[in-house]
Amino acid sequence: MPEHGTFVWNELNTRDPEAARDFYGKTLDWSFDTMPMATGGDYIVARVGDRMVAGIFDIRPVPGLEHVPPHWFAYIEVDDVDARVAAAQQAGGTLMRDIFDVPGVGRIAIVRDPTGAVVGWMTSAPRPA
Figure 1 (cartoon, one colour):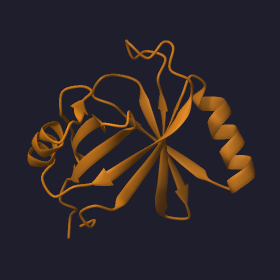
Figure 2: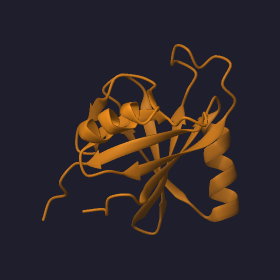
Figure 3: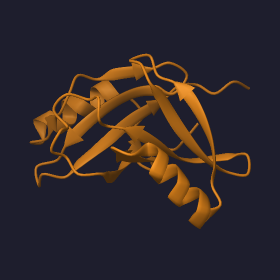
């Protein structure tokens, strides 16, 4: 299980996932798998050998992100995302969207800290033994 308080995932949010895939494949020797998302479309998982290193997410169909530029987005592991979000709100943070579950991945919150920085917090799903 990932350790609480550590960065566990990086995701490229882009409007051109195929160009991103081509660029990072050529420059970093990443290979890629796709997995279907419950909301539709595919999520691209980047790998170095057998190890997953990042994701590529197409932001075009997501309402409210029309004017958000492409960017890398980080996720931090937390021991209890619901409790940590409540603490964040008490400390002046903002929940940017409802907490959501990604089957087989974990429970995720998108949080804005009091300085305006946005980050993902995730309680990872248990990994098969």
